[in-house]
Image 1 (cartoon, each protein chain N blue to C red):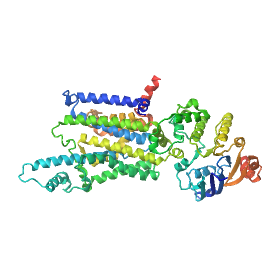
Image 2 (cartoon, each protein chain N blue to C red):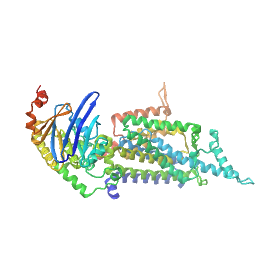
Image 3 (cartoon, chains in turn green, cyan):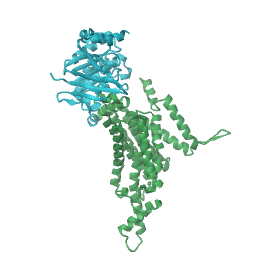
Image 4 (cartoon, chains in turn cyan, orange):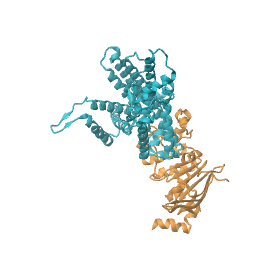
Length: 388
Length: 249
């Protein structure tokens, strides 16, 4: 079964091979090996990019293959980040607090320790009480479970309600936008229990590895992101190939016809929506320790729209297209907005890319939609056709 | 003989327009039936009701030996009960190959988990090849359905209907856009299928209906106007007035 699946999908093997070579090369050229051709901050950028590629293939499965234009998948990404961030922040603050008590003659009571941690974490929002959602924050295992469970359950409930009522097309897109907006607005509140607009910070410091350098931590997360992307790619390639893929693509092209063949379309949509949400959560959980900070702005509606833009530019309906789109656009975006691109002086006006990058992105999106509906990935079709 | 499908007293109103008006019609487990009628007679709406797409205002639709009502069931449940439908306009999955189209229609468990774990087996492949042979698409199994000609798409859809192994086949204008030879072949396939199940054909083309050589039901304004052999119904004066008369006007 497995053999025939990979044999039938040579592009999966190609992808894994290229990703493996890329991962090894970056690792060898990083600070860790002493070569130091790739800076630690750039390793982090590349690691984050791999996580964005992972959430992009999830988006491609839900939109490009199943035809559900979800404009809320970045919410699941953010939830994954928050879930792992809670443990990172709690465990690290706990370590600092215990250390600060170390010099005192009388050992602190557990209540004092807990109060001090609460003060440290929630002082910024004028509180020191632990909200109930932090109940499992002291357990890495349980918080990792939350990375999968919370996005999964939210997607399951939301999807069940939406698909059962046969909400499709633009209406579903608007509904998913509303979901991510509502979540962001809720998290912005100081009493949301997740530090309001401050978000969670210091996530780049991994408790238990205080002595490890950021250089080695960044490489570990980079490799972990590459492994997650590879696993996600194989998993989704397996789902969209074979009969499941047939049904999913059938739903995209003619939902009613699939129903008349006897398939319960809603179950399939729910399956796709929920699995992709879980993968998005995992991608977020790997992304934010590399970013170091997460705040509610991350899951603003625009983030999920960018996700759709990446997939459209890369070419939807093919997994490597989503990877290309996400990597290409997000790296280009950080080059343009990070001051990498030289400003253009027109004499009467200076084009500053930090402002104009979004305009350029908007135009490319329109151009791709109008002239290259298959996206960058469509170029591969031309190559294949030339060969045959 | 007990009936496979009993439709009784069904009425459907769209914005005040009675598309189906107190319609009663029955089908035996094995029979070939043609339904004819002028445009707007309610032929397609009748199919929509049976397949669950449209919910009637009143009436009963009773199915099978256990006499279950189809009215509370979803489209996919009804399809799993064994009612297959071929649409007027060929609707195949154009982005997928002929083989994938047939594999999707093939009678197999329909749940997501079963489909995810589905393995290609020799017996399934044989069934697909057998059906492709019946509809003359043996050489096109690996072709993308979107590349097929209009006639071939019609064939593919008939093949998908056969693959579902339904107990009741609802076939909407199968002969549209077909050459005379293709029509003859379609007639043969439908007649053959009707030996083991009920086949209901909605058709405008009188020559095609004559070739089916079966019981004919004439619909008019959402109700049965006449029923019997083609010669019997076409000699009926009311039928001539409402159907043939209007067609010539």
